[in-house]
Each structure stands twice: as C-alpha cells, then as structure tokens.
Length: 370
Image (cartoon, rainbow, N blue to C red; front, side, top):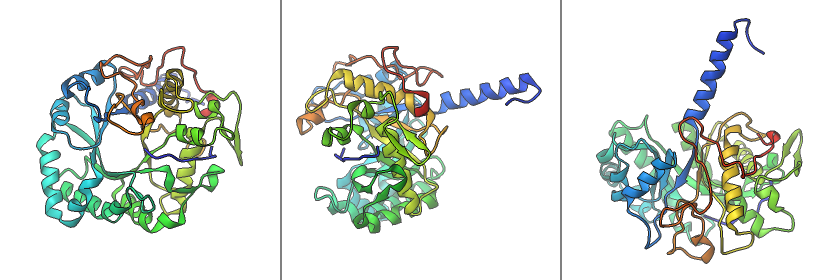
C-alpha cells in the first residue's frame, strides 16, 4: 500500500410485474456485489489456510485477494466458491515477461491445476508498480509484457473468458485529484500506464486500484477532516459542478475515473483491490476509527459514486489479519481479525443476500453519498 495525499476529496400498470422487476434487481445487486477481504500472510502467528477459508465462510466473506500463489491457500479454497484475486508478486514479473513458456507454466501450476475447484476471478500481475517509485521502478517495464503473456497462457488453457488479467495501481500515479472532475495521471507515468490502459480496454478487464483515505488524511489532517475520511461527514465537503462529496473515498475514486477518461480508458471499470484503516501505529489509528471506516465502506459500495451513481463498487478490505512481520509499525495493524481469528471489532460482511448490512453502531452514510 502506498501513501498519497488527495484533496479529492414510476411503475407499469401491472403491479405484479413491477414488483417482480424490483425484486430481481435487488437480488442481483445483493447476490453479485459484496466486499471481499485481502488475505496477507506476512505474520509468523497466523492460522493455517484451511482455517482461514473456514473463517471467510463463517463470516459470509465471498471474495478473497492473495498476493502470491500460495499452494496451501489454493488447496484450501477448492470447493469453497470464494471468488479469488490471485497475485503475481513483483519479483516474478521479469521471468513471466521474458518468456511466454514461463507464463504457460505459471498458469498451469497455479491456475489450471486448481480449476474449476477454485473460483479465480482476476489475476493481478504486479502490485503498486510505478516507474517513478524507486522501490518498484525496476519492475515497471515487465508489467505489460507479463500481463500479455499471462493472458496468452489463459487463452491456451481455455480460461480467457473466465479469468481477467489486470494489475493493481496505487493513487501516487494520480498527479491531480482536486476537484475530482479534473483528476489526471502524472505526466511522467503516462508512457507506462497508457499502454496498460489500452490493453485492459481491449481485453475488457478492469483496472485494480488500492485506495486509502487513511493515508490522505494522515498526510494532510489540516485540510482533510477525519469525518470526511471516515464517511461520517454530516454535510457536503467538496462541490464539483453539480456533484457533491461528503466522503473522501468517492472523491478519490471519481478522480481516478476522470484520470482514466483523460488517458483513453473511459470505459474501464475499477475494482478497489485494497482499502482499509489501521487500528494502531499512527495518527487517527484507533480500533473505533477502523471499525467505522470499514463498516461504512461495506455499506457504501452498493451505491456507487457521484460520477458513476447507482453502480455498485467491487471492493476489498485490507486486511484479514494483523501481520507482525510487516514494516513500518503502522502496517502491522490493518487486520479486521486478530491472528487467533477473533474479530478486532464488530463487522458484518453479510450473509446470503444481506451483503452490506453492518452493525447498528456503525455510522450509516447519508443517502446523498450514494
């Protein structure tokens, strides 16, 4: 996850037919869309993967993201029907980019061998790679070739219509985010990002984006209020033409939509592949704030953003557990469960069709947020 500071903040005469239509619409919305949870494994005290999958089932969590093809996790997912984002680690990009045969072997070993028992949804080829970030710049030239080779390997396996290939970006690639309608990518990342956007558009794949209001708030608490970052602002904070923003999440996501439009990706969908709030280790980090943010995120994503209203957002909370081997200290405290599988605070991820229900003590966003 990368730090970023953003200001972006009538029925027909046949009543039975009308009611049936409304019922079908509601069932489709509730049944298809929900909030997943990222399963990070950088801890030496975490439960075995089989127990983790049981935890997902017990709490009605229907989507998972993992960051590498961990065999124990993939084996545990067999028959679970949990939808999966499978990650290709940054360190593995060069080999996959350089040789299509490597990609074929990777897909055979980590996807085909578990299909159809594991419900693969996306393959995230690299995470938060940026040509201007010293920590990941070395991988930038391999991302698109690796994506193309993985796509080719899926096609050879007959899985290209079932599994979408993408990559996960962070919001540091956005150069301007305020107001959201003026969102634009940094000029020095366009030569890296534009071909990826073109590839995603041609493949009808979404862009994965890690969006954290926490880092924007923590980096600029004088200008970004805590309620705006937590979905609890009682009034409009940002007006952008005829659009009104009461929460920073919508403003950041709409800034990304605007940036994509300017880069030729107006038709792309965005999957929020990480979002969350730490419970310790930094400014504004309490269990109560984490509960409020994550609970309101679960509630909020069914309604879309001001720029794309009434369009449910696919999102993944980071993360399932606190991970004690991560650095810096803040990064150890994003879990919604303790390693002993006990909830850190009450959240209801939804069971069956009640996907976005949250405990009554989690603040519900205003209808104008939707």
